[in-house]
Image (cartoon, rainbow, N blue to C red):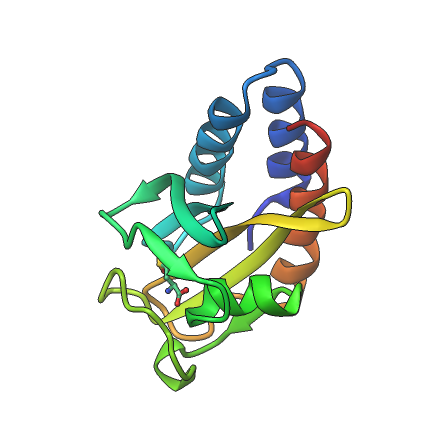
Length: 148
Ligand code: SME
């Protein structure tokens, strides 16, 4: 179980005192990597010219561009809803950036109601992410959005 009672305040503390957007995303990916176990990738994709472009992350080299509506990340943008995927191999159109990934959660990030990017977290274990992770990571996204 992730200690969200420590992780979310840590994200708040680190980002509240820093006015730099990319620095805040980079440090948030580092905190997620530190506090959550059983991950192989954690980071951000940001909307740029109508597509998702790779942002700060922890893990292996990843795809640099994702179309809205494509893969798990693009679906999160298209629907505006968190995507909780227990088995990425069953998700039609899943983009396998890292072949180690077996489950994934993608949370949309919003500013003034508009999705400007996503938080993407991957695990080598099937079914790694729960409804509780979804609730807590949506809270983390809210704290982060307020400090960007
Ligand atoms: N699997 C994602 C692509 C990004 S990587 O997981 C880092 C997707 O299907 O959108």
